[in-house]
Image (cartoon, rainbow, N blue to C red; front, side, top):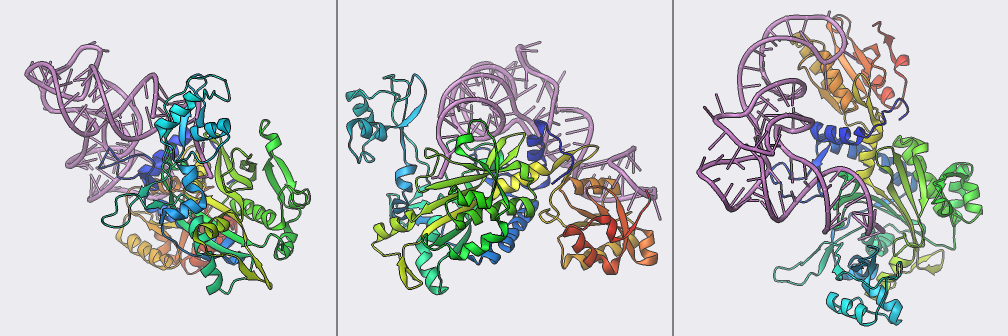
Length: 514
RNA sequence: GCGGCCGUAGUCCAGUCUGGAUAGGAUGGGGGCCUCCCGAGCCCCAGACCCGGGUUCAAAUCCCGGCGGCCGCACCA
């Protein structure tokens, strides 16, 4: 995504406007029902295409080469699973706010610290408030003794399975991980697995956000591309070899020590590993893999990417080490795209404890409770940033999307809406649509049709003119330069395929003077 | 969730303060004419006052509530 880039505060809004007007995505159900709550979005015809292309890239560049098995688990799971995973404890906070400095605290934790006891999760809100006052607990930050009422925050969606069930017994998953953890044992068995063993999931997840905002950045239902790497922490041998070619590859880190300055350090994988910062070969390898995937395959510029190290306070309850792969835009700053968490044996241990089933597996003649490393891509944010970073505005409005993720590969136009040109154009469209996503249009002027394709990032436009009828050649137009070459229809599928793989237009045919 | 500002065709905007007759424009959309390569021109058509309640002879306009949007704070596993 090199090239000129407009950088104004309007870009975010313009992209949202194009997304809704042209059919990438828009707020779900709002057209008919204005009361539809925020945080739910629908992907339209163009949005689905770009989404599917990103997912395909993930399958082709991550899952297949790494040998990950993709599975699909339910969105709705019994609450016991979330007791084992720690989500019940962490998603139902009872918060109290200091009326003086407006800092919020978990009421049960304040009391547990003060009174040095445990197990206050089940105590009612009113009782917690009463205890705070009775024991004169003060605000740890400002020392004030002026509390708001204790409020309960439910960050998980609950429901009751069973027609006559009244108490919630199921919850919508806030991550796909628990499905993989719960099904790990059988997957391992049916695939005759060895460690490391990789499971992948593409799935919807649900979080009852307090304040969903900024389009696809904060949603209540969203989609994750998760890889769950189960491994033996004692045995890094498979990853020694895999990492070797990338030992000099520079990872971009914002370390905890640099949080205040924002200084990004480019650290070769070798150094990150040997200093102990990235813990082991496996994690180091995956950090390299995902930085390369976002840069080289999805087209995010390196200088807009960084791994931000999360401190102990920020980390999820299950993680012992945690980097967010973040992307930068002038409009909204750094935003997390991929959550890279080293979950240790936290999840399998939790499920072993809760279910009573031993989840340790045999590998190389010994019994191991595997550790879990999990890179989890926020798919919706990734789609949104593809558009945001591709947006260009000069004499035209256009999207410099990577050619491999644009919704349409090519458009086919008759130069004029004359029957003989239309017939020929439809013939070319038929030929190409076997292998490509093709858009056909014959309405309005040719210039207007080019501009419409520019706006949704279609990399190539193919035009049938009167010369086509004489010599079976068409013009091929490059979205980025607006230059054209003339190519034979017979060779078009091959040439278009090369073009979409990144070939320069100039080498593909006879240039046209303009 | 709190505070400030805001909500009119698909999109952008006028009208709201100061209530009044058929809610106006641009752009976009559909159809047609014209046109040999970059949002050209002409004709025709469709399309809106966020939802609910109140005040009033009369509400897009004033009041209340809800929902949503932007900004800030908080939250963000």
